[in-house]
Length: 206
Image (cartoon, rainbow, N blue to C red):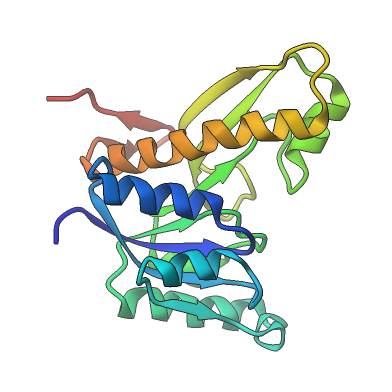
């Protein structure tokens, strides 16, 4: 097996997980998914993982009552499965020190806006409600500052007049499903590094 070994964190339908699985299967993402961790036992993304033969882990609500203890369990499971990078794909919980410290500058997050604009859990609603003419998608490394980690990649989306909120979300998802695997491939090629000032350098193809 070649490529980077990923652990993917989910909470819901897992469409970005599916995009990653599909790109690996197509041979255009040099990676493998070793473990999928869900914060919810009914997340449909678990079915996607199982259909692809990927091991899964679900933590109960009781375990999450102590978020540090929960992240200690997750970090250990990720390490035990040989994961090199942690990919947050619709994971609706804050990742804390046990995971961040175990995978420094190796926890990747996807955000449905052009950070630093519209951070937080309701970015699409916030952008739509503000009436912005341009929004987009950000892929960044997660750190202790929520939605403020080093930015790896961004893609802008021009919001067309008359779009509904759901139409905006659909176009955001279309970008996500392409940009996230593309960015993970940059990482797999060893082209992504974090500078001392917490900006990201992406090296050109040799």
